[in-house]
Each structure stands twice: as C-alpha cells, then as structure tokens.
Image (cartoon, rainbow, N blue to C red; front, side, top):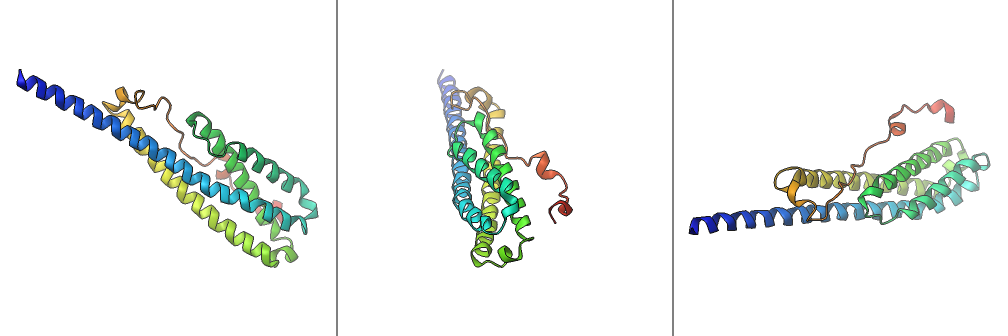
Amino acid sequence: MDLWWIVVGAVVVGAYLWYASIIRLKNRVLEALGGIDVQLQQRHDLIPNVLTIAKRFMEHERGLLAEITELRAKAHQHAGERDFAKVAEKFDTEAKLGRQMGQLLMLAENYPQLKSDGPMIEAQRTYTEIETNIAAARRFYNASVTALANAVQTFPGSLLKDLAGVREMPPFFQTSDAARAVVDASKYL
C-alpha cells in the first residue's frame, strides 16, 4: 500500500512539474512578444522622422509615404497584442510595413539630396539597427514558441495544456510569400 502512495505522489509531482514548465514556457513566449513589441515601437517611433525628412525631397512618392503612414497606424492598433489568435495578423501588418519602409529607403537612393542629407543618413542607420534587433527578437520568439509546442505536444503536456491556459498555440513568425519573391530593382530605378 505504501508503494502505491509513492507512485501516486510521483505522478502528481511529475504532472505538477510539467504543468509548471508549460506555464513558464507560455510566459517566455509572452516575454518574447514583448521584446518584439519594444523593437517594433522603436521602428514606429522612427518612421515619422524618416517620412518628414523624405517628404522634403520625394514629391513623387506621396502614395508610398501615405501607405507607410496608414500601415503604421494599423500596426499601432496591434501594439502589445497578447491574444495568440491575433498575433498572426499583427505579424502580417508589421511585415507589410517593413517591406514598404525598405522600398522607401531603396527609392531614397534615387534622390541625391536626400541620400546625402545628414538626418536621413542617421535615420537609415538607426532603421537598419532596429531591423537587426527585430530579427533577433523574432528568432527568440520562434525559439520560445518551439519550446512551448514541444512541451504541450508531448505527454502529459497534451493533457495539461488547457489547464495551463494554452488553448491555442501562438503562430510562428514566418516570412510572407511576398517577402520571398525576387525583387526587381529596375522598377525602382
């Protein structure tokens, strides 16, 4: 009879430890989302400065500048999103914003006055640094999602995931099909 209680106790302790690890991993995913948000907020804060500088020189690019402004506003609606079901939409909006900013910076090369403008050079350098930090934060996020997925997809995690509040898995950050497409630079020259 004593052996039976030891086995039951071991099972209960093991289940609790697995449950606690799922909670810890879920919190790491949320922490990683927070890290992405910090970097994205830095990008969002930089965008108005870049647009203000660019507007002085890029009269023919008003549509692109307006689209970037619109995407930035839409991205702000998703800031701090913690609902895993809505994170994919957030990532999609941010990917579009990143592509448009990349296009703006590529088009800036066609404007010699803009290209040599001190504040624009500094803004481009800062933007490149922020994008590098965003990429690192996304890698940490994907690693955290992988660890959580591994914990909830293996027994007994599959039984404990709902109890731990992981009803829906967070999406991986993935590059969109548009971002994978080959860029035809001749369209921008």
